[in-house]
Image 1 (cartoon, one colour):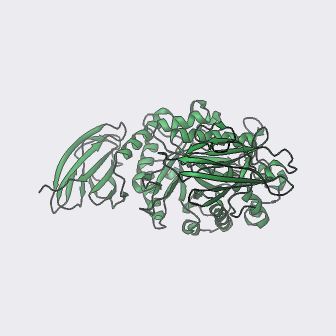
Image 2 (image 1 turned 45 degrees about the horizontal axis):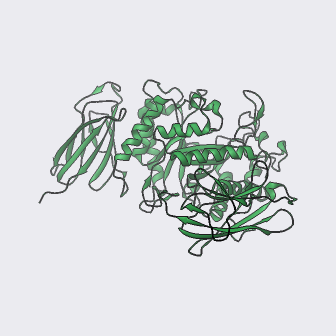
Image 3 (image 1 turned 120 degrees about the horizontal axis):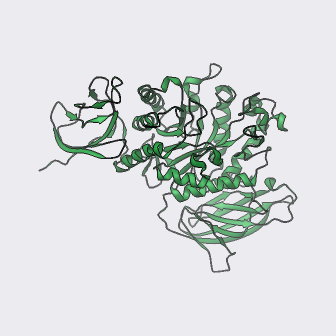
Amino acid sequence: MSPRPVLRLVPIALLTLVACAAPRTLSAPSQGALPEVERLARFEVGFELPEHTRHPDDVTIEARFTAPSGEVVTVGGFAVVGGGFRVRFTPQETGEYRYVIRADGGSGLREVSSGGFRVRQSDRRGFVRRGAGSAHQLAWEDGKPFLPLGENRFNLYDPTWNYNQLSAPEYVAYMASHGMNTLRIFIFTDCEREEPQPGPQPGCLEPQVGRFDPEVAAQYDAILEAAEKHGIYVILTLFAVGFTPGETWKSWEDNPYSTERGGPAETPIDFFERPDIRALAERKLRYVLDRYGYSPHLLAVDLLNEPEWDGNNGEEFWIPWGEHMAEVWHAADPYGHLVTLGSVGLHWNESEGDERPWYASPHNDVLQWHLYGKEYYQVHALAAEFTRKVAESWGYGKPVLCGEFGYGLDDPQTYDHTHVGIWSATFSGAGVLAHSAPPFTADSDVLMTPERGRHFRVLSDFLSRLSLSPPLHPQLAPLATPEGTRAWVLGRSGYWALWILGAEKGYGSPVRDATVRMGVPSGKYRVTWWNDVTGEQLATEELTAHQEGLVLRLPGFVRHVAGVVEALPAVP
């Protein structure tokens, strides 16, 4: 056992050293000739353990890395396809590191490798954390804000579900080409697929309790490596789909923890409540940490997907489980990855439950909910609900993420539901991920075609033009005309970004002579307007605000438009 609960569970090895982004194998270092890696790049050690008597997934591995500062970081390891074990580590200091790896294959913990390597400086951005400048913002270690924008492409590893049947690495590159930065993926818990033909479920990492499929694990490796290459940050949902008794697609009977499949739990409630089963589930957390935790592009671990929808599991069961699992992860993780849990939201509590204790829990780093339903097919209702839900979540002092939203009958000529969703969520102060899948369910499923993806590209480009430090926060909606026109504002003193949605009456027709009235201090301001569909700059002008504030006259637009207002320095 490691002195820090952070690693143990997966095998690790040594005879091979690998450094980062495109891993390359190095020979074991000769004395005085240490390998060199970049700061925040992956360092990997592989080893064999030919005499182990335990199953490879039961081999205990403890790797202790001593940083130049003297700090000791302990991580675990894992078994690989073809035999052998590996340890992965990401150095966060420059200078010389030393390491010692010990493993227990059944005859006690013993040293299997030791050595050192040098770390040079790099321009890598590092891990995403809760921002120091704002409780509601995520940021890289240099303080630059990270605004999640991307997809819930939940089974990316199955090309038949991807646009154009792209492979997983190709799809990650495709996302990046559309300006996305965040991907949420399910690690399936229902391990048997019934359609289109029976067989193992793609993405099932743990087909039996405590037994991890190395080939499936390698698929997640490939996704993370593509994410590192293309600037995408990944949320792995650890226990997704498989808690509904008597159902086909999300079957409890196909869950490895179910007695139907040889597991210890008769019901999903046993899974959530029994301490011995929680201890077994912790192994999966540690496996994921040991194998993927090295990566700064692992944005967060999402403990559970929609427990209210998958099995109608009440908050009184999954919240204590989630708090326990988050505590286990936080105690074990030396890199400080974020933890979240993808519940549906307060509008769908079960058994008269209430998920606000999870929202408030110190173990929950990112407050997440999802948004679907016929009530929000119309875009003005969607925008209003995004605004309401973000405001409802804002008081918990955490970054807010809509982990899934979508409408399967989104107009393929305009993709206006997608467009209004990502803009209204972003301007309400939340990160947002649009769901994409082949068009099976009208409530949610639509492919991420290039035409749909372009809406993300334009929003991403718009955000990249903004001055985001100090942070921009949602402001009170200013008055807008014609009647029914609504404005969203992200701002701080002297700087505001605006998004305007045309009135529901006459929506889709050209809008002329629209205005927005902003209460700002007297002075001169520069105002720039952008077409939020094409990205084209429409107009820029300088205006003077007097005591009555600033009246902005918008250029002609259709449906919606975006702008920036910035105070100009006073001329002596």
